[in-house]
Image (cartoon, rainbow, N blue to C red; front, side, top):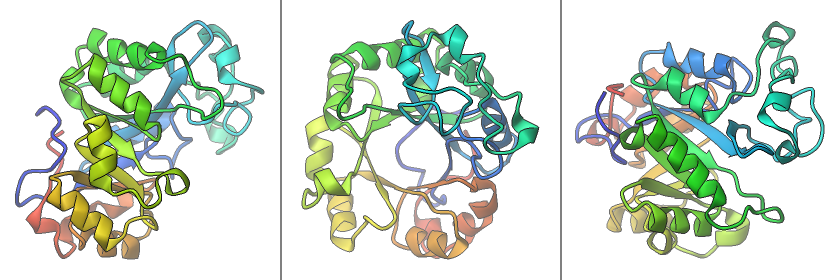
Length: 271
């Protein structure tokens, strides 16, 4: 597997990125969703969300609280990893997934290593931020311990966290995620420069042509989420973006690879 690079090689289509795993077909951020993404040819990268348990383990979970996607209740940070492992993380999606559990980042890497790149979104809750350096260090050191430093992109809505991570670990690949409420009026080049990021990530409704032109002038890779319809994929890929995040990544591979504009960028799955 080739090391991760923010932009696909010239002549290849944009990266296809499985958002929270293949989350349209299996419960998000679970082994089932990651396994489905790994077994689908044409998916380049798996995106997952991470935060900390009470005992400091990095876990794959989107929300600050447990009730939406597990049988638990309250803040995930209040539970140890062992306690979190007792929760059902799949029945909310379908009873057939009742055996799914919240995985640790180590477990995800052990399964995904050598098969797909990882886009690790580090969750930082506005009113409940970890102390500076705590979450960043836990995530990157876990990746380093697993020997996967060259195959990971770190991203977050918290640009201060990303800037701090980049200061602590200068050789990492990092991206900033656009928040229209907080970042409105700020150009991608400015946001990325503050965090020394090489990737700019935004929602499909947030991307404007002026933002795209600015990102292109700055040499930034541009990834767009969450593109689940073929029409949205065709329109967005034609703009010249470099990565497509989708809950149904398996359904858009052919569209990405055949869309107008695709041949001017990015990558069939070599990851």
